[in-house]
Amino acid sequence: MVRATLFAAVLLVPVTGLLDTAQLAAQATLAVRGGASIVDSRTGLNLGASVTFPSLGNLGLQVGGAYVQRGATATGPGGSVIFAIDYVEISGLLSIGVPLGGAISPHFLVGPAFAFKTGCELEGSPSSCADVDVNIQWIDVGAVGGMGVDIGTSGAISITLDVLYTAGLVPIEKEAGNARNRTWSILAGAALSIG
Image (tube, rainbow, N blue to C red; front, side):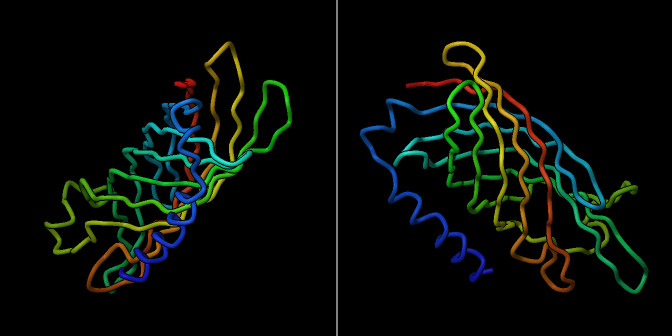
């Protein structure tokens, strides 16, 4: 867990050094997104918002928060169990824009995410994880990578489409097992220039 947190900090610290504070207020973008989180064992909601601060050229920092439903399958002596775990996630992603000119602006995203558990149930059962003596980590540290596109519509508003992959860096269960969150997120939303 300590190694995973240090890894995430190493990813985030260089990104914050790229920020040009003179540009922060002038060109920031606020986005609201929703979509699906897809794990091999569960499809859930992913609802959130982010602010993207431009920096050097096509680089920027996207700071976001989201409610994310994830899950994992663990195999034990009694068979497989699907954990349905809900999180509040905070991310700090390096945004790398691809300048094409025109209304379509592709971008790539990479960086750390910290997810804090808000609930846990066993899929297909009325039982919670605590009912069956499963000790799920209260925090999940993940490495995020993906790509997306912003489509300009009118003035300061654009449509956003993103596909992200989050690889959990720590096991979701404290005592045993190696199950980790591995999540695809497909998101759509709207962005507004606030500078």
